[in-house]
Image (cartoon, rainbow, N blue to C red; front, top):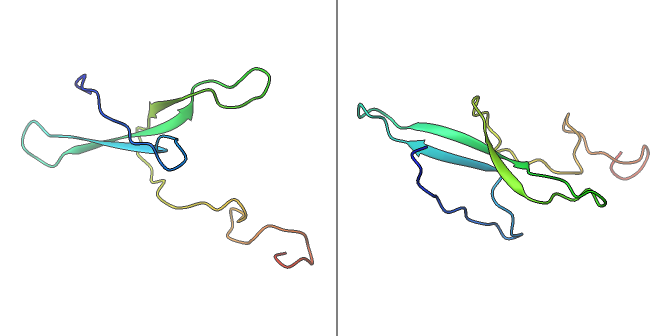
Length: 88
């Protein structure tokens, strides 16, 4: 980056976004290159294990993370729950 400070908008919960995309203009006038940064925990609390801050780490692959992941859905798309219950 060129040293500029960009504002980070906070969501409704007060957290910064999980993915931050920065378009960098091409010197030759071509399409801009998009740099992708992912939010990672800065440190964890010693006693509680709660995240004590966030930092952004460059993601060279720039893999997509735009898909919503619901906590009650397993990785294969089936709902989690007790066997024989309303969801399992």
